[in-house]
Image 1 (tube, rainbow, N blue to C red):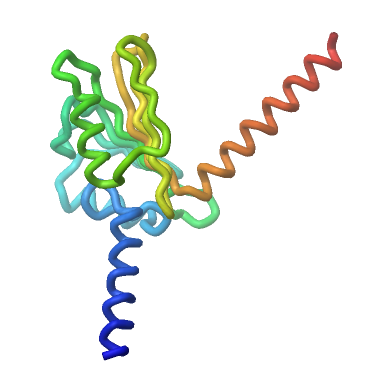
Image 2 (cartoon, rainbow, N blue to C red):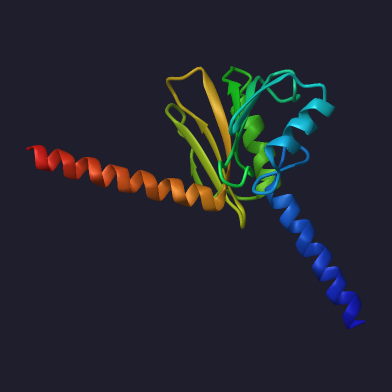
Length: 175
């Protein structure tokens, strides 16, 4: 009995991990390599542009509301997927609400949410392995969903803070 419980727990844990970092069907952030993503896209007959550390597809690759493009980013040293940007065109049909509803189903209650009647919309989820951000700037014609590997996201935040601090120090030294 104990072995069955242990086995069920192991299966559930590995399934939960897979569901946490898998996006767009079968692409795993933090695990998939550039070659693997290229093969997945080729198998779907998607047209895409591939350059060092980045792949971009057009709107025909995925059946998503008002999709413009999907961009996959890869780390230089490991060639692992660290993030995905899904760009869509804003519309009166309210693509934002469609994406918001789908993301809530998958990731649950957002960790941050700012959805004013007029203004910049920003919703964020943090899971064990991912940071998912849905942004729709007010004065823009497009919205974006960004999926980040959590570790890479934290590194970028720290880098941005360090850069801002250095810029402030340089300004103070100038004055």
